[in-house]
Image (tube, rainbow, N blue to C red; front, side):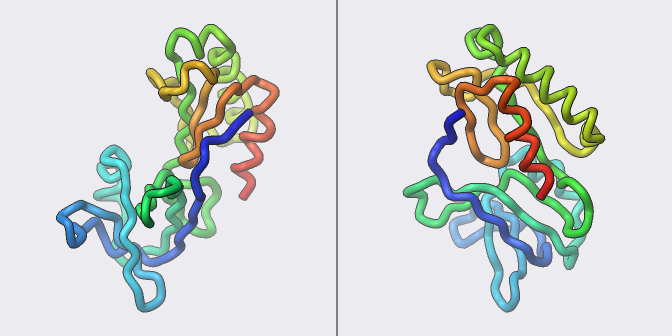
Length: 165
C-alpha cells in the first residue's frame, strides 16, 4: 500500500465561523491562542457543518497540505475533543470498473464489516466513489487527505488503526 505525498496537519482551536479571506475565498476560521487560522474546507464539508458548529466551540480540524501548496491546508475531518470518532471521517473507496474488479469490492466489504464490528458505522462514513484518478495503481482508497494505492482486505487493520487516535 502506497501513500501520495503530502503533509498531515491537526489544528485545535475555537470555532469562529466560515468567513471570507483576503482574496474572497470562504474559509473555516479557528481561534488558536491570539491568532486566527484560516483553513480550506471542501464545499460538501462546509454545507454539512454550516448550521451544526457553534461559535466558541472547541474543535479539531485535520487534513493535509499538498507539497508545494504554499501553506494552503485542506481540511478533511472535523472533530470535537473528548468525543470518540470525528464528525466527518469519510473513507472513500474507488468503485470505478478497474479498481472494483481488482479487489476494491472486497476491500469495501472488509472495511464495512470492521467498522460495524468496532461500532463505528454511525460515526465513520464509508463511501464507494466514482474515481480517485489513480487507475493504474488501484484498488485505491482515500482517508484523511491521503490516497492509498494497491489496497487489499489485508490492509484493513492498518487503515482501522487510524481510528484509535
